[in-house]
Image (cartoon, rainbow, N blue to C red; front, side, top):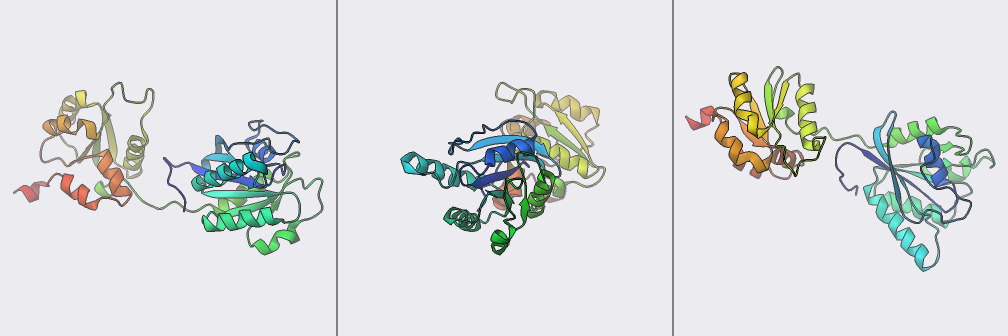
Length: 288
């Protein structure tokens, strides 16, 4: 029941009762104090998101959630927010520091219902006796850690990586190009464009083109005509922003296939084969 999110970033939820050391564990993983830590139960009142690069997972976002055993009217609201935060999670770490209670069983049932793979981190191993046997029946990987001394943090990350779902091998435009082909990506730059960066579909298109041993030429719609002339119109595909399609279509010769980033995105998500076919320009053989 994972909710799709933009880009390639993985979301990892840190869940558990109050005061088991969830925030301390995030600080240990990140290597700096990014989450507020206190001995007072219920310090984390809303989900907190921390983005970082984490080997071997790459770009991830850690979600520090309120305690699942919070009480009272406000406590129930916090628990509800913690549950909502799980809808974004690709995987989870259930943090415990004592024998299982109804709250741990509630968390396990909830993660199972949402089909979120998870591991169990027994925190405060420097203070507690061995608790592994108490959690062995949950049937998930278990690691003893100490957020305070940073013991077994690398092992923890490796275990999370091992349960992380594999990405589906969907592609946006790789199916349209072969090796040593040339793709022109038309990227309009105006006041609505994000300053200093490209949007994700444009980045993904560049990466897929390079991965296919093809050549990506990135240009604005205002320079498209000159760009095509420079390469003697030896282009195998042109992809443009949907807002510029009317201008671009007047410039691109009919024999060069033309589509938009939006159509390729829809197709990648399996949402619009019909739309893709309606908007696809007929190939030369089809027009004859």
